[in-house]
Image (cartoon, rainbow, N blue to C red; front, side, top):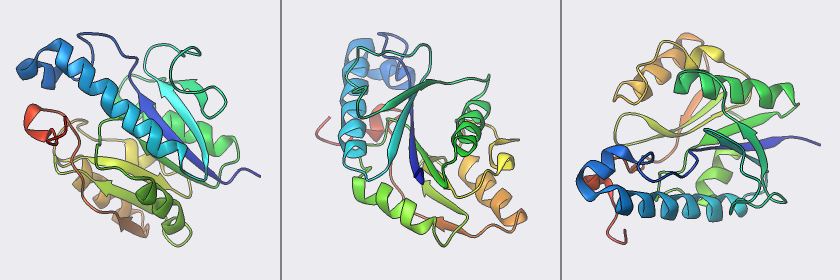
Length: 195
């Protein structure tokens, strides 16, 4: 029976196209290596979760990459803005019969399996679960029902995303649970020491 689904938004790795803000100070090659390291961390964390998993690729579905076809379903992001792409992924997931759905990206080195598992547990008693990021966005969003408004009228990749999402949840009278605040890697200052 389908209950919990973890969506992973993944940008197809291409030198010069990933982590561009980071690359501005460390160079394309180092940014690319860091991107692959972050993706590898996300993959290891996701593999230990007790839920179904789907990787949503940015450009094309890669069946020959390091995301195992046995462990991860694979799909393609559709839509112009990040909000549209996430909204479509959630719609697809609930249409497929999942009861609780969480989405993550691949740029949060502090993300753990425990946090993801806790998100699904919290969705049994909350409508929405949000993992706040230090840059004013979020590293995880989970829902136990499809709330399209949470993806609309946002200035994506700005520091207002989290506050606007929490505000929308309140307006919809949704119970929301906030996870620990973590750092997404966007710029050199966000890098943990082991990177």
